[in-house]
Image (tube, rainbow, N blue to C red; front, side, top):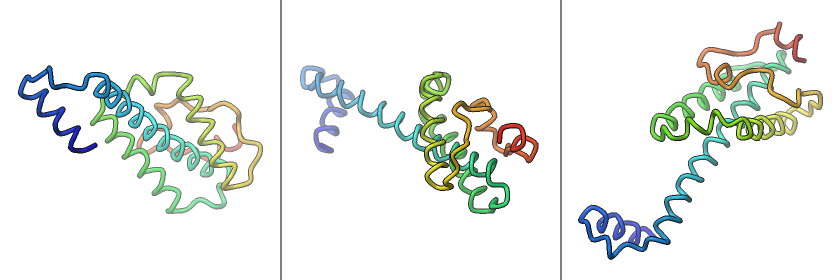
Length: 143
């Protein structure tokens, strides 16, 4: 597969378009996009799950959760810089609903909590803000 990809890239660079395997090349390009979206979803779900744990289990807050939250935000920011077209994905309400659901499921599995909100009480911009964490007032409001 790597040899094929290198051959296709060389044909593109040198203008030998007749040598291109257009059908498979199109599939590969689509797969790359889907892979990027899956990675963004995975990281967003982990971030949401840990924000929920931070919010709903204040007595268990620690450096590990804070580190995971920071790491996921940084990884998402890097991914968006490398692939700016993913920014559109963040504004898709269905995508964000799926990310919320996956993150909520992660938090439920890891905490046993069952009363987490079905819909996200925060904006995606808030969740991605580098220094934001839900405070105790938000726990009382949403918990």
